Image (cartoon, rainbow, N blue to C red; front, side, top):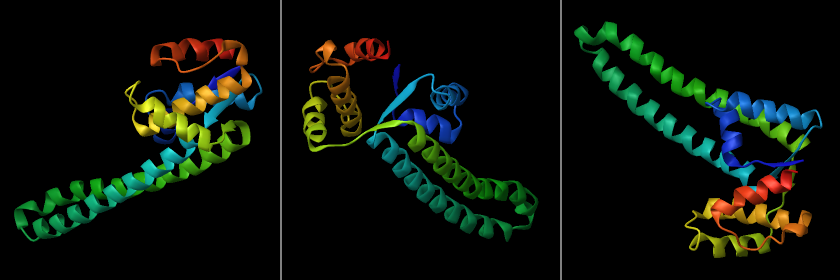
Length: 177
């Protein structure tokens, strides 16, 4: 059975968000050979880019915070309150490192067990076509076009052409059987 995953699946794992446990269970089902995970290549690159952007943003925030805290520390009445705020600055740095390490670990696991849908010129062309009619952002159109391409190649009996975002769920469910 094919189970299609995308960027948000990786982000749930890396950031240990609300659906983290479910995503981890799905990963384990794949690693145990019970299901086959299929993932667009872009969906592994996009989280890496998000982590880099977020790390830079947090580092910038930490630098601004450090500067302001040094100024506030010069005021005697604020000195005791500064320590708790400094914990926030260290949390920003530590969270970047933790998330980067988790991304590397999950990337290794995913690349060992997931079928990656290669990003091709045809997929790029189709993605551009899907943006306007389905009101998709470019990155979502790439993922969508990748899944449609994979379904066409591996499940031609479904005669997948351009389908709406509501119908994609039906096609994906059918492909898992």
